[in-house]
Amino acid sequence: MIYESILTSLSLEGKPHIAPFGIRERNGLVLIAPFKPSQTLDNLLATGNAVLNFTDDVRVFAGSLTGHGDWPLRKTDKVNGMVLASALAHQELELVEMKDDTARPELYFRIVHEETHAPFRGFNRAQAAVIELAVLVSRLHMLPIEKIETELNYLKIAIEKTAGERELQAWQWLVDKIENYKAAMTGENQA
Ligand SMILES: Cc1cc2nc3c(=O)[nH]c(=O)nc-3n(C[C@H](O)[C@H](O)[C@H](O)COP(=O)(O)O)c2cc1C
Image 1 (cartoon, helix red, strand yellow):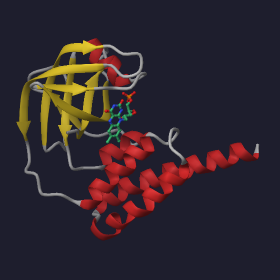
Image 2 (cartoon, rainbow, N blue to C red):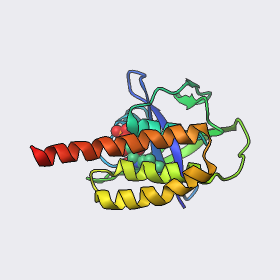
Image 3 (cartoon, rainbow, N blue to C red):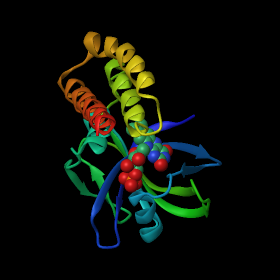
Image 4 (spheres, rainbow, N blue to C red):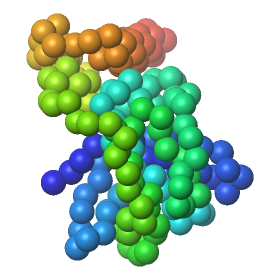
């Protein structure tokens, strides 16, 4: 099972970095597998710490892929890190093992501390649709544009029926990114 979370990390100079990551549980440890190259990977190896933020504010997922990445953070309690102000819960992690790989190393962490800040309010289809489109946008250069458009048109149904303000904003950022990508592709074709 994979849980989509927001991973916050710090560079050696203390600069926070926010990125969505799918995380897995393996034998009581948390497995994070970043594709190289990755600022998150560099930070995790430099500091040995990560913070997992579980949030239903899908603007943070869409924002990190579309240039809207400046979200309020506060310092963590037990490890040197930052937690998202909008997190419903968070976990503070310490690196215990790394299996290196040329494409996608596996990093295993133990949970040092965890906290719940607000209740889970139930599933929302528009939030799930934004996460799906965010995954597609993170693979924009690898997937055929026709596949992205077909999936977008299906996911839009959940947006139209169930979105609130935050979901609409996040959705629009992703749609704009796809439109800009298509325009750049057309420009390249005409050149
Ligand atoms: C829902 C979601 C899950 C993701 N999971 C992963 C992941 O497990 N590994 C990965 O390398 N990138 C993942 N990505 C893409 C990264 O968030 C994105 O490439 C990010 O910029 C990481 O690069 P960075 O560490 O340089 O910021 C995911 C993106 C989304 C939207």
